[in-house]
Length: 167
Image 1 (cartoon, helix red, strand yellow):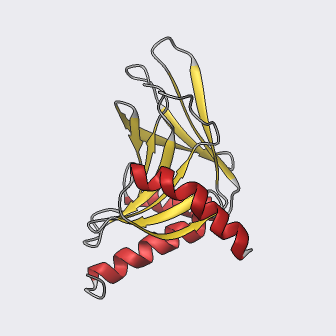
Image 2 (spheres, one colour):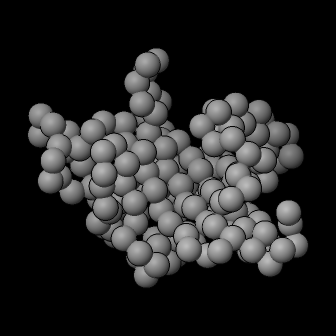
């Protein structure tokens, strides 16, 4: 298992540190937790790998030491949704309507964020879907292997930072 974790760290670290500079505090499964100083995030990328020059779909949870963001879910979509299109996160058949702006989508508030994090703990996969400008449906699939630990690591680090235990 330590060898597998090391391989995951080696494979994920360049991708995620380029997209999210900071200190990696956990890497396992398909998720990583990063301390960015002003925030801590648990991050993953879609199982659908983007072609060179295309947007790689990613998703994650953000935490801030002041607790203004505490488990805020976000997704960077691989395509721009058409105007007025819904963006839906689905975990174990449970849909969550997200707020979309450009090619990003976010959770709608604290209650939804808690429900999403609870659903993630009992699932193995999630999807984010919408419709593009041409009306074509697109779905970004994600593995949840390692997600609970990455979420806990990011939340724990920011809780310590907020308490002044980590500078």
